[in-house]
Image (tube, rainbow, N blue to C red):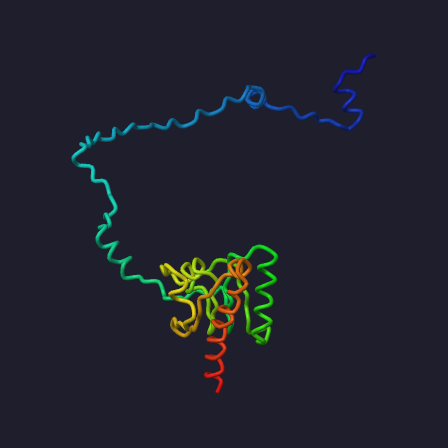
Length: 208
């Protein structure tokens, strides 16, 4: 005797068997159809076309600066008066830029020793400078050419300016023979010493 499915469930105390109603089962078995998304109506709004003429366009430009006003403004701004620092500062200055040989150098050193001045008060300068680049009280200019360049002068003959004490502002100076001339004619050393004595006498007078 064969048992049916219901007999087996009854023996297992699983009856009654619940069955789904046919309409509900059919509903669940039917595939779900997604709902249609609501349609969104879009409207294209036409923008009005605006015609722009070249005459109606205004271009912003910078206000030009009048050159005359700029020049006047620059002219009003004056740099401060600043005096340049002097290249040489010493109570005594011996200026001789043309002495490049050894005998001339030795002769100049002997002249410095003969003055018997403190070493920190005497400068033997052998580079080309001008009057506005030095600050000194007593100055010896060796040679007419060097003296003219230093003083921005045009003395034609040494004989017309040597043997005299000259002044330029607060500076007392003499113009004398250069070392080369003294080496060629040793008799000129006496004249150079006479010129140096003019400055030494001026120094003694100021110290008294």
